[in-house]
Image (cartoon, rainbow, N blue to C red; front, side, top):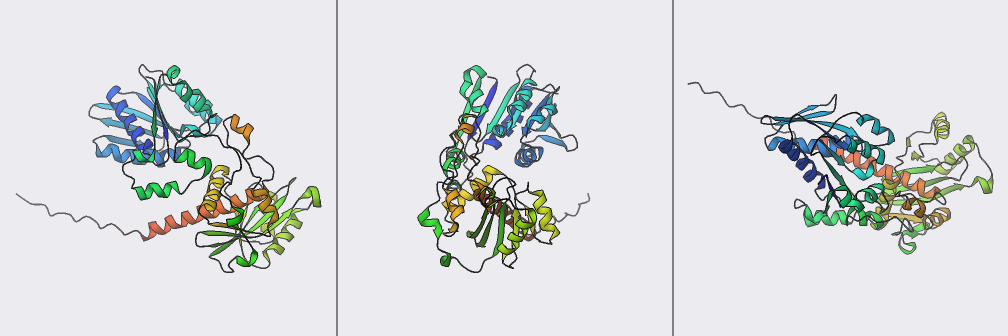
Length: 409
């Protein structure tokens, strides 16, 4: 056996089981060797793997020295000591970081998020006799390069495949499992809950219901906890503004602005800024804007329009956040927002991209959908960060340990 592949649902205990087993295997098999550990980024690897791993190892008698400058862990037990180099594999350039090193093993956390070039380079570094590769991930599409090259070729690769679900994680209560099941819809449910390598196809927001989520203007509340306008700016495509109010956990899409230059002609940044000020109707809104619209952002700042924030443009994460709102009946759209509603039901997955192993929406009829995910996903992340800060600030201060008086003899 040359490789171990562990995939499956979220919160299944994959990372804990794999990372600890990797260190134990390395310590029992080698001494004074070099190993690799990779996440999508160094930060993600340290947060999701290294932190919990160090606590587990310490509780079981291992000594860990963490050189954060060089990103190297030295793990010792008794007379055995090995070095574990930490890498980030976020893009094609990452392969350059791992070239030249000789390894006795390599651990990949969330390998499906890494480019093939990095993984190929890292596995090629494992040239020590009896070296092994350890892979851990949530599923992606059935044509993803890792599925095609590794999972579909287990015998050729001399690899063992372990599939995990949340039921394998005995530390989770049924209540927590049920909460995670309610967090995902569509392909995200199939992948992150069932742990299946399924294709993204069909209408993206399949949980949107015209009957449930489209409401007349008079149905909407008039007072909100917070308000924002989200913007998808198009230099050669339609520009759209969407006005939102948020009450508790529920998002209300109150109004839309939609200018199609192919129908109504081009506009300057100054004219769009005029339209945005008119759209705001003298009220104060947070502004979440397409981060690529730099010239328009400069124009807004020149006019002293405050509370501007470059939106988080993580496409799949944003789609998932919006999908969850529809699933949980936490997103309603005004029936007057005709362009928004029309694009919502025609926003579909790109089948050609899926055949290449990529999850992408078709880049047409997507302008209000882009604006919506900019706004809702960015607001969701901001509120979650705010909640975490509050929890840290309000956490009880641990009592200092009382020193016992020394007893003289």
